Amino acid sequence: MIFSGWKRFIVVLAGVFFFLFVNALICVFIYNQLLHSPFWAIRNIYINGNKVLSDKQILDAAQIPKGTVIWAFKLADIQERLEKLAWVERARIRWNFPDSLYIEIFEKIPFIVVCSEDECYYVDKYGVLFERCGSCGYSRFKLIVENIKSVTENAASVVILRSGFKDDIVKLLKAVAEIDGIYATKSTRKIEYNRKEGFSIHIDSFRVILGENDFDLKLRLLTKISEILEKLKKIVDFDTIDLRYRHYVLVKQGFSGKE
Image (cartoon, rainbow, N blue to C red):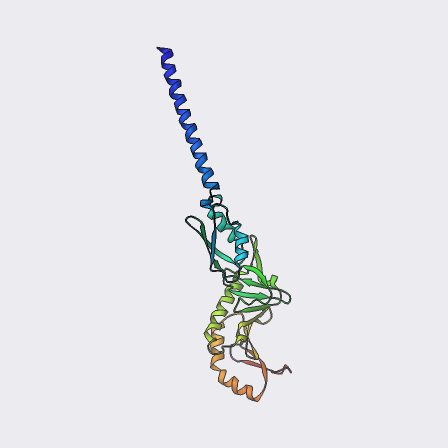
């Protein structure tokens, strides 16, 4: 009886192992079918939303060879690779059963371009200098500084505008936006900063010095005296209007530097 019980136990155990073995073979077969069957191969990759980056740059970063089956990838890994591109703020990947991938790219919109004598960088809305540029045609505003290092700091592995300095730029751009309808020329897009004078903007052929604060008040004052300045422009040539002072406006004449 004892041996009979052991025999039954061995038979049952053998049956369990056999069942598990067969199921393992089935799982391996299904896995191989999923991994190698051409039915799951990626034949179409659709890219949307990119304006600065080319489709080739996106495909190179995504590393998805056509013909590879969908199960060879994790969509989250593809997204992570794409979001390492300097211009990509966010990427979204979607699989369309059975053979298509849709990649949607949300590119960064440059907040401003910061330039010194020999280099310019696009800056995103977080103040990060994310890519060096030449003509820098993707930004509306250009800020000229004496030295880029003097207005930036390192944070982790990126270079960013100093927080207080970035806040000042935001305030200045809001003030500029309010007068943009009055002085709607490309020259209002150029901004300068130096430690001696603070911020200044260019309007038509003259420069307006604003200093370090109260940009909205100073630019509203500029709109109020614009008629006087237009009349003055017909009489005498001037190239600089200094609004840093509380009780008066300083107008500097042409190339002579007279005031």
